[in-house]
Length: 336
Image (tube, rainbow, N blue to C red):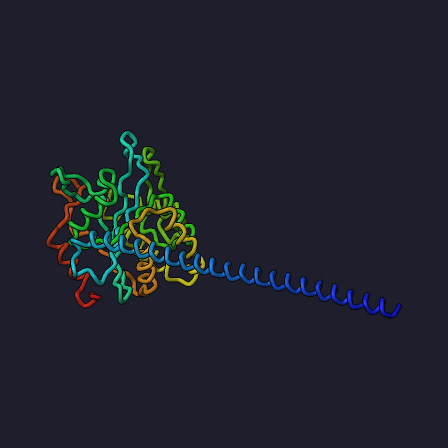
C-alpha cells in the first residue's frame, strides 16, 4: 500500500513538473512575441517619424526654394538703396458705387508705408487718388482707377515708377474691414478741424461731423477720411489722412492695444488681401517688433492741381525725387 502511494506521488510530481514546464514555455513564448511586437512597433513608429520629418523637411526645403526664386524674380528691378527698408503699399478700396455699371473697385486711399529695418522708424507717403498717370497704352487717367483696370499688381508697378521706390509688399482692404479694425482698437481720438457736412446718395455717403475733439468709432473714422470739402479738395483729404495715421500709430503703441493684437492679426490674415507669404510675414513681424516710439514722418506726393481742372493732381517729379532722398537716407541702409 505504501509502495503504491509512493508511486502515485511520484507520478503527480512528474505531471506537475510537466505542467509547470509547459506554463514556463508558453510564458517565455508570449514574452518573446510581446517583445517582438513592441520592438516592431517602436521601429515602425521611429521609421514613420523619421520618414515624416524627412518628408516635412523636404517639403519645407522645396517650398522655401520656390519662395526664394519668386522673391528673386520680384527683386530683379529692386534698387540697392532700399535694401534697408520694408516698403508696403496700402490700398483702401471703395465700395464700387461709382462703377456700378462696370463692376470692380477703385483705390480710394493710397499710401506707401515704409519701415527702417534697423531703427523701426516709420514714414508714410500719401498719394492723392486723383494723381494723373499715363497708362501703358498712352492714355492718361487718375491713379485710383488703375486698381479697377489691373488690380494691386498694376498699382504697385505704377507707384514704384512714380516714386522711384522699391515696393516689397502690398495690402488691400475695403471700407467695412477698415471700420471693423478701428472698432477692434476701440476707436481713435482726433480733433475735427471744422464742421463736415456732405451727402452723396449714389455712393451711400452721409457725413455730418461737428468741429472739436471726437472719439471716432469705425464708421465715424471712415466718414472723416472720405470727406472731401470744397475748400482744399483732395489735398485737404490727404492732410486728414496724414493726421489720422499719426493718431492711429500712437494708438498702436499704447499698452491697451496689446490684448487686441490677436484679433488684429486675425483680421489681417482673413479679411485683407496681401502679397506677403509666410516667410515675408515672419520678416514683417520682426520689423514691426522694432517699431520706433518716434512719431512717423508723413508727406504728400509733391505736385499741384492741373491748370484747367482742380480735381486732378499733377506730380512734380523733381520735387518727388528730392523728398525721396530725404526720406530714405543712406545712413539707414542695412546691406546683408
